[in-house]
Length: 63
Image (cartoon, rainbow, N blue to C red):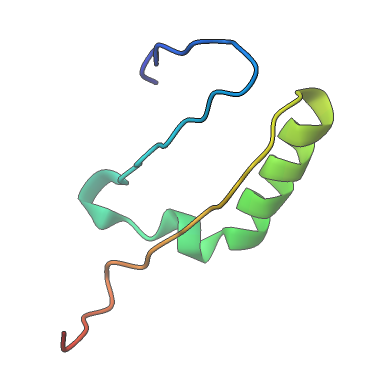
């Protein structure tokens, strides 16, 4: 896992973009596990989530 550099000061926000290997839909297929993981992490560490977006890039759109 990468060692992200962060500033640990109140009031800072972070924007992360994460792509799975070969667009593997592991996050979509395990969305409940992902939700539970966030709940567990929030119970252990103090942070606020402003928004989360999980995109299913395997589905093709006509746009």
